[in-house]
Length: 206
Image (cartoon, rainbow, N blue to C red; front, side, top):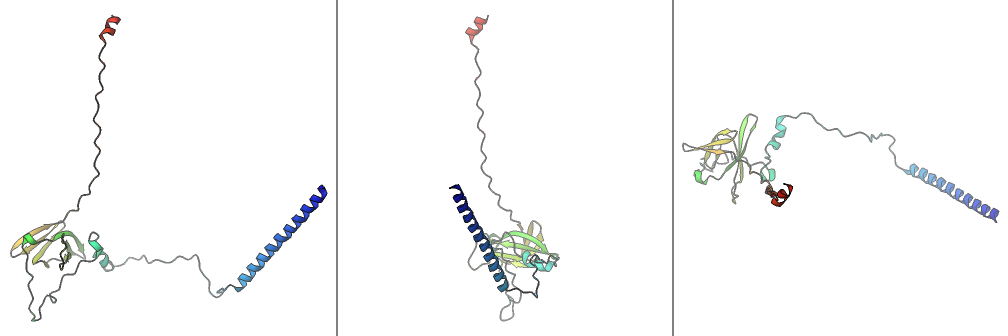
């Protein structure tokens, strides 16, 4: 009985070995056929490991004009509108139209910042309240006008405007302070009651 079982197991193992060898031969055959029909460019060598080259050369200052003209703290980060030239302000009859100066009480521009570009100082202005039909941002050079007021000086923390012999200083707007989280007040210290001496205990000790 045992010899028959051993012979049966041996035949089964032999059949499995033949099947495994046949599968490997068939897989190798399919692989060879696939590589034969695979399109290859033998004339060109492909450098798979070659990395792209990045131009990190130092560029002139003029190439960063667009970056400088996009203030970080202005909505949309779009350049402020350029000041109108004298030719655009000239009427059809050839006469220049003078810009009407607004009273200083109605001057609603705020100074957002000043910066220096190619030895030329420039001031950035903005309106806190947006009005339809009016520009909300502007950048001005020295001797240019904004709402009829002439910009005569640009300093690190302020600008000086002049109109009709009167001067007005516009200070640089300070950023709004961030609100700190409310501090938790420490719990009041509780006074521990002092132990009162027991008169009966003292008498017994005596």
